Length: 410
Image (cartoon, rainbow, N blue to C red; front, side, top):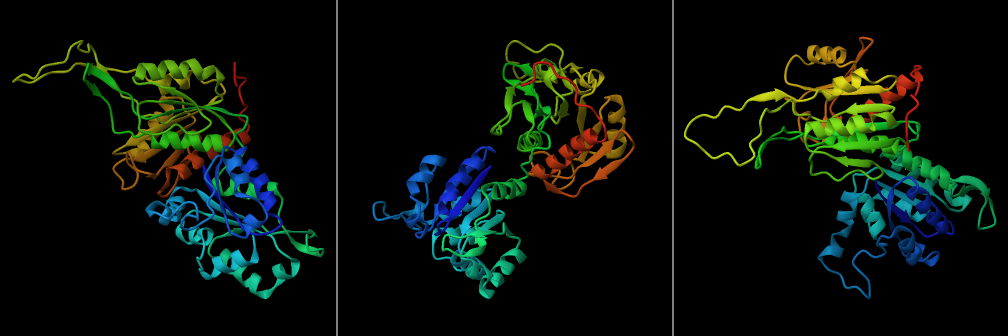
């Protein structure tokens, strides 16, 4: 996860350095953006050393670095790559500019350019905080969906006592984690997630596979890590980067995926089989490239191992969740799979529906449960769908499903 940390001018600016460290503990990558006033209280070098990232202090370069095309559009690049913008401390001046759409520096321009969620942690003199203009500006920003972490009461740097002191680093970090979906409600779980397609060789240059991009499985792995789980991601070939914090196992064939799942199964408390496993493979793959002929070619296929069914039979107290990517009779096929595979939940979707097929960033899922219940969700980003699936894992635990004693769990 990538967060832009806006630091504006105030005595509390030094606490932003503590916030960087706290967010890094959650696996969050932080890039600092400092106003000119902030640099009067703390140096950019401090944030550069803490974050390992460029600290942005100018809109169009500096006296030592002339402006160029890259610097001219940098606010757009940062706006597109961040998952959240947090401004801490947020002064009355910065709050006013954000509320009124003034963009006269990098931070306020970034605010207007980003579609990411925004969090403000105000810090100022108590009279400034209670002034009608500041209260009105805060109300405007809240109405736009900005989350405001209210300042605390106490002794202020100006010598007065009252509301205006920057909220604690823990309170700001909690707000950031909440907006990013980072929690610790699965910290006792070790989750195997399978993702992507598998490939079955026909000859040294050809193979059978499917259209899976792996995006749903990778979203599940990322969401589980955010919620504190230890995650073993077993993936077929994809073009995706492995989420930070997972134990990554690369496989290619269905047999390799089966071996990897069974190898790591003793450590797992939950298994989520999101991979689109090839159901068939050639009986006798050719050792040399098949040459083109003038007639038809018949390819004899056999079934691949049914990994979900095998895991379901051996699951014990583990929670097992399978997927059903269907093109027709979705409910019928999903419920049949739920019983035959001994799964606790089947996540089904109609891959012909708009925004729900392979390689989309969104999905439309229905969860089919062993007690006969089902929960349908509207189209949503795959990361949000992943959280809805993980919510079911949590519900099963809260309903009394014991966490199994796993062997060699890390």
